[in-house]
Structures are given as structure tokens and as C-alpha cells.
Length: 110
Length: 208
Image 1 (spheres, rainbow over the protein chains, first blue to last red):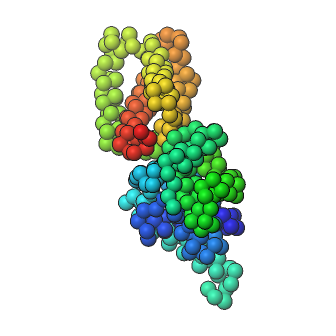
Image 2 (cartoon, rainbow over the protein chains, first blue to last red; image 1 turned 180 degrees about the vertical axis):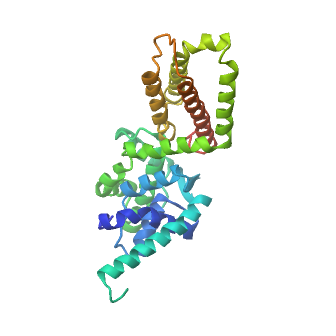
Image 3 (cartoon, one colour; image 1 turned 180 degrees about the horizontal axis):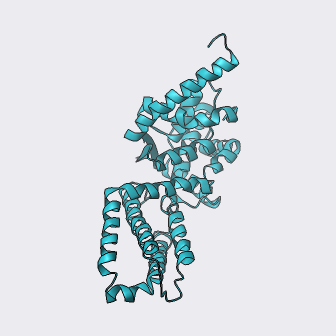
């Protein structure tokens, strides 16, 4: 990830937000979506994304659907009921964080 | 341009040669690489071989970091095991253990069993591990991370059994509380492992 130290803590929230908007997505699709939205500014690496997805899955935040697509298996991730509720909390936390950072970095805009 | 079966097998072979041993991890990596290669073939108008070489050369480090397993990646498994204690079937099983324990505590059956209790636990641990290895390593000839990551719980219980009770010596005195706690840990693990197996066999994770 670009500026990884700054983005690292928000990776799971980014993933959950995308899944909330798009229903279900597979790993490659998530990396491309983030790249598209941020116009290439933010690149989520495979080494950061997949461990995060697996952790969220193990925690019961995400569930998996496996389908045979184009001669191979594709693992789709989607939010569970618990995950949907958790996304609301995490987004609120992130917004609060951005607001606080804004107050520190640029008090005039806050 | 979608990749054909031979091209997918080529990617699978490449990952196997590079020590990506788990089938479920490999399946996700194959899909990721294949999608990247397909996109490259389309955008750059090149053939599979060139697209694959170019994709792997520029993403090698990141691709193989998907296969990196650390002790942190097994931590959620441990948390899930402890959360499983709150499931109704686990609570019921633990209540049954306590009732059965105090019902049979003073009988000859328990006096007989007590001496070698930890040895029976050890026997069950080893049988489960051996049977699991025979099925996945011997019969299916495939290893799954989804299955093996739950072994961390089994390992902890195994070492706890060795540490708390000595399975190789007859035990004259074992604390009732310790015995009940260990039985609960053990029985809930069995329920948890069965639940994980059920999830595994109901998913499409097994590649036919």
C-alpha cells in the first residue's frame, strides 16, 4: 500500500465499506476497485489484502462463497450480519479519526 | 480472453513448484494471477506466456506474500474456539460433563478410568491427527490451510495434557476441578473440530 503506515489501520474498514456497497467481491476485484476509486493513488497489495480478508472471515465478519468461474475456483467475500453492523461502527470511527486529524493538520478547514 | 484449463494448470504447477502447499491458498492465488494475466493479455495484446512471465516478474514478491503464514494468522482460530464455548451445544455438553462426572465420581468405573484418563486423551489426540493425515495427505494427497490452522488448538490441548497430567504414569490423585476443566476444553474442541469439518465439506473448497 502507498504510504502504508498511514493506510494500514484503515485497510479492513476500506474492504468492509467496498463490500457494503458492492455486495460480494473477490480479491483481485477489491484491489482494482480501490485503484480505480483513488485513481491509482492507493494500491492495496496482495500481501496486505488476503491476510486481512482471511482474518475478517475467521472473525465472522465476512463469509465466503466459492464458485467455478472460467476454469478456476473463485472465492467471493461478503459481509455477514455481524459484519454489516460492524461496518457502521468502523466507518463512524474512521470519520471521527479523519475529523480529528483535520483539526490537527488544518484547523481552518475543520 | 479467458484462460483455458491447461493454462490454469500451468499456473497451479508453477505455484506448487514454489512451495505453495495448501490447495485452498493456491486456488485463491491461481484466480488472482489468472485474472491479472487475462487483463495483461487484453490490454497489452500479448500471448499467455508473455503475459504470465511479465505479471509474475513484476508482482512476484506480492504474490508469494499471500502464502506467508504467521502465528498471528492462526490467532483468530484460537479466539473462535473460545467463542464456541458460548454456543448452546457447548454449554449443554459442559453441563452434561459436570453431571456425569459427579454421578460416576464415586463408582468403580471412574476409579478405573481416572488413573489413565490423560493417556486416553493422548490416544484420542494422536488418533485424530493420524486419521486426519491419512485422509488428507495419503488418500486425497492434498493439504488445506482451513483444516490445518485449527491444529493450533489441538497442539495447545495436547501440550496442556502432557504438562498438567502425565499420561505415561498412573495418576493416584487428580484434582476434580482440573479434570472437569480439561474435559470441557477437550469436548468443546471435538464439537468445534466437527463444526469446522462440516463447514469445510459443505463448502466447495475441495477441488475434485
